Structure formats: structure tokens, C-alpha cells
Length: 405
Ligand SMILES: [Zn+2]
Ligand SMILES: [Zn+2]
Image (cartoon, rainbow, N blue to C red):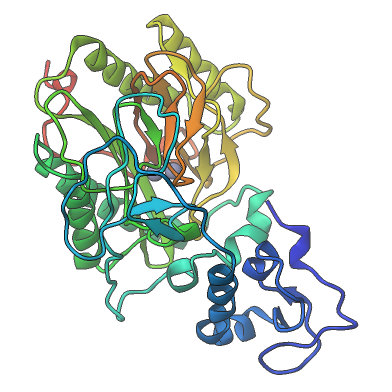
């Protein structure tokens, strides 16, 4: 959604880069409540040009505001190398100690490794250096659903194909004993090898290149030093930025031998996404997606997460339309050919309610029971839908229900 605070009174401020009258204000400075002098710019160009020096203002402001201390948790300390710390406050601050929290299940955060490097030749989105998206929040496409040009659609096909191959590479290494940080390394390296940028990296200061959500984690889990255990389920959510566009998909995988209820949960979630995709075509109301998903999930005794939704995608990572996955939602508008968006239902074994870990990212179920998710990036065509992130003949054979032919 466009922020009112991005537009300031032009009469008093001058551009921090060139001195001309300034009508834009750095959103990070607004968030940190820094003085308006020094945070105004005349154009996006001047803002981008100044960014590498300007962002030091944000760092200084953050260092002067003290980080609250945390007590030692009940987790035995893990001995790891330099740079491994717990994530606090959206990845902007880190601590050597486990924060205190009323954990809803048995999962705990583990230390995270230091930030991975992206080579200079890779084309990056505008948050890669500063951590704050600049173009995305104020774009018209936060309220208007863009009809994509054939050229943009072709680029999205290529990017989604890369994202699919990256996710498949991650799926192939999943087994007991593998850490989610190792999954992140595979995602990071495969993305860069394909010439792409891992979109989550530094997006609103997210510290890693993908999300890994284990057991009771609904979404946005941070890859860390925890080893996957026999019986876990783990969702890996990959987004790639390539040729100026994003491609976003995720799948939930079984780690070793998984109990029957979790198997049913994951299968049901897969089916919820398939059923939702099957209704996509021009003229269908966006709010219908949630009805289809809610019907199938409740039929199996599961619940649908309400706090996180599907989203428009393209040159922006997240934009209009917003796609709720729950029933009786208030989403407005109908689908039109040329629109691209994700559907990504999160289905819980117990209650639908979510809670947030102290890291500001990890969303967990309120009752600590398990949650599963699947996601595709879709294109509405004249006659129906094209699944841009669809499975490939080479995709690993990890879902038993796809084998019965
Ligand atoms: Zn995703
Ligand atoms: Zn998404």
C-alpha cells in the first residue's frame, strides 16, 4: 500500500544529493523518525545515487537506540564458528543468546550464519543493499492489478523456470541431519549460478536467501543451524529475481518417516492449491479462491491461516491483488487475462491462529501443531491459467500421491 509519508511539503526541503526542491523522503528515515533535512530527495535517481552513503544515517540511528537484553533460554548452547548468532528484530540485530518467549511448540530458533555474498555482476532489486524496498511500497500496482505485456510475461516464464529448478535442487538434499542453513546455501548458490538474485535476501532486512518453515512454523522461517530430524516436515519457499522480474513458489517436504496425520496435512494442502488453481480464469472473483481452499481444508478437519495471503507479482515482489486463502473473505475484483499472482495456502492441523517469534519473521501456529504450505506463481490466460512455476519432468519424485498412475 502506498505510504502517505513518502510525500512531503516541497516548500521547505532540498534534495540531499543535488540541492533541488525535494518531494520524496527516504522511507527508512521516516520509519526511524530521523530529521527531514538530509532525508529528502528530488527524484528516485538522486535517492539511488546517494544510497550507499545515505544509508549510514540509518545505521547510526540504530546503533544509538539500545538493544534490549535477553535472558538465557533453556536450549543447550550450540558451538558454531564466527558469525553465528540468533536473529532478533527482523534480522537487523543479532544476539548470542536465545531470546525469552512463550514458545507455542517444541521448535526453537538456532543461530544463523553470516550474510551470503552476491557477486557484483548479478542484477539486484533495490533492497539488496539498503534492506528497504524503495519502488515497491509507493507503486500504483499496490492498488491496480497490472495487466502484463507479452514481453514481461515471457521474462516471468524464464524466471519462474529458474525458481522451480532452484527449489528442486533444495528438495534433493532434504534428509535427516541436514541443516536449514545448508538448504539456504543450495538455494543461494543455485540462484546465482543461474544469473538470478534470491529475492528474500535483505528484503525488509530478511537475513537469508529463502524461507525454511519446519513443523509448527507457518511461513517465513529463517534458515539456521538446526538439523532436520526424522519425522519433520519442512517448507522451502524460493523467490528468484531475474531479467527484472520475480518468480515465487514453495513446497512442503517430508524428512524421513513422517506420521500419518502430517502426511494427510501435507497432501491436503497440495490439493487445496490444485483445486484453487483449477478455478482460475478470466471473470472469476478473487474471493472465490478462499472459498475453494476453505471447503477442502475443513472437509479434512484442518484450518486455514488468515494472516498471510497470496499476492500479485512481476517487476514487484509483492503487489495487488491480495489473495486471501480463507472462506468469506472480502477480496475485491475479478481475474483478467494477463494478470500474474501467487496462490499459497497455509493449512494448519489445529487452530488457524498464528503468533510471531521474537525475530519478527517466524510465524508459528498458536497451538504449536503443524502447518503446511504450497505455492505457485500463476498467469491468467484468455482461456484459464498457466502455472508459471509448475513442476518439470526433472523435478524430484517426492510426493507419493503423484506416483499412482
Ligand atoms: Zn513464496
Ligand atoms: Zn509468495
